[in-house]
Amino acid sequence: MKHGATALAALGLLALAGGALAQKTSTEAIDEYREMLQDGNPADLFSMKGEELWTKKRGPKNASLEQCDLGKGPGVVKGAFVELPRYFADTGKVQDLESRLVTCMSTLQGIDPKEVIDASWGKGERANTSALATWIAEESKGMTFNLPQSHAEERMMYEVGKRLFFQRGGSHDFACASCHGEDGKRIRLQDLPRLTGNPGDGVGFAAWPAYRVSNGQMWSMQHRLNDCYRQQRFPEPDFISDATVALGVYMGVNAKGARSVAPAIKR
Image (cartoon, rainbow, N blue to C red; front, side, top):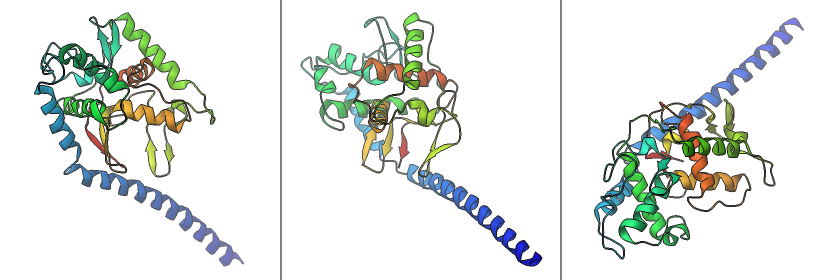
């Protein structure tokens, strides 16, 4: 009996160890899969399109976006991505990358904002803003996030974003914090980073825009947030709404010091 009990205990320990090993192996396998996909990331094609759109004369005014001010002066792209969202005096609003691009497309090129806001994901002018955002993000790849909080509007949007992050609702009584409010959470085999603080280089806010292998689309942060609301069973937010911009401020400020890897690649 003694030997039998010892054998059963040993089998139990082996089973526990095997489970832990399998879990570790699955996580490592996903990391290796992502690393392999980085070579030849299809995001490069979207980035090339974005760079072309930046210099191409378009719209009723037949103008390019080369004088667009993303926060560092007209036409300055490098380093702009890691300091957005931020306050812009000309609009009197805190804007993220995509909402700022819509402003520039409207003022410089004469493109009606409704052509972007009312479009579908991956279609028309909204697809163009995603491509532009991909290229602009790539120009700051490897740089660290440092969103400004000197203006009262920026600080207010941070607080609004924080409240939205923890707001529970929908049929499942979910909040952003339900998945991203603490360490060690996973969904299926997907690690869920904690976004209430700095999650680290290339994680969370520092990984979007990203190419989604599962549906062959380039997803911006606006698209990512929209889909998070869908999964929470919330009503779909409007494109470049103040709510999504505020969430971007909250996550972006929390990511201070994290290195951007955008455009990344996701499953």
